Image (cartoon, rainbow, N blue to C red; front, side, top):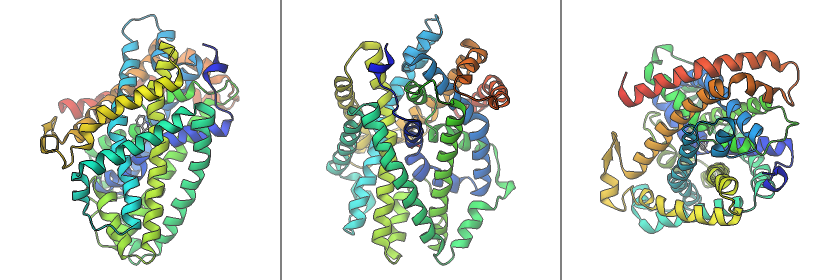
Length: 445
Ligand code: TRP
């Protein structure tokens, strides 16, 4: 298909901001701090950095190279690079995973909007009661999906890129302001100690597992998001330096989010290990005790909503690009039909945290509640599985040698060394490590 009708990024910064916007989301600001808190703080942070460098960035480069080479969505890209009838299944898995992740991610993202209002109006409704109210859950979910639909409808340059350009810098500024505030709280230093001074005795097998999973989720890898975003990238750009910039910025934002949350947590004498409730249950109580807490709290949840929106946009864009490229649908038709589908698929998730008892108490794969089952299946299992296949596909089927030809377009000569390191990481380290981690998770070996 002609790339000029399909859409490209309007500028280099536009692509970097959009890809960074996809990567930065609830994963960085909500998931990363609680996973770090549960896994020993600073020791986890070190393992996480190692996973981003050794596995995350190589898979990111692999996805971007496939996308830019083929100018296509995940299914189309794989079909173009291999005659095999089996490999496209990995692309279909990615497209479906986009729909399913979006269906519960937008529910959680809806809470961020709700918390802007809860904080602003000092709502006395408990978090539990809020989750159990079907009208709120469906309403905020639908609202967030509507916002996502609106941005994606605008297309690549006028929609995704323009919004990312405005929203991402605002995000960074709000975050820096919050850190400055958080560090002045009494007792903040013990939070810094926990977060930045590693206790190596805390590194265990499960720390590594948690770190790898978090790296995949946070960098938006394993379902073809970065194949799709790479497909709008011009041949003039340096894919390697772009990938490193995206990986670095995403990691920076997560690390900064930790600097907001841990000083505040320790200052208030709260436990870092409490899990997914960290942001939504603890931070509001901290904001309540702080001077100017209403303003700080509102800013924080605005920030979280902004970050989540640029991520939901990238989740929807994958199946949209699939329908536009492979089925010849218009962007508008694809966006509307997919949004309706995501809404229907997401209803049980929205109702599964107290509203409908059957969905709330259901247990499957060691997970409780429909939303957590979806999160496990499509976040924890499907993404690393996709990453495993994609690293084999690019490394051995399309071959790292051909991918390097694509990657050297737009790159400068200093990239040669980086490229050979990349080839080794992608062909050997990524598949082996991911296999071990997934095997651990699923079969306990
Ligand atoms: N990376 C985003 C976050 O951290 C979530 C996300 C967006 C994502 N697109 C993705 C995760 C694709 C996996 C795959 O919140």
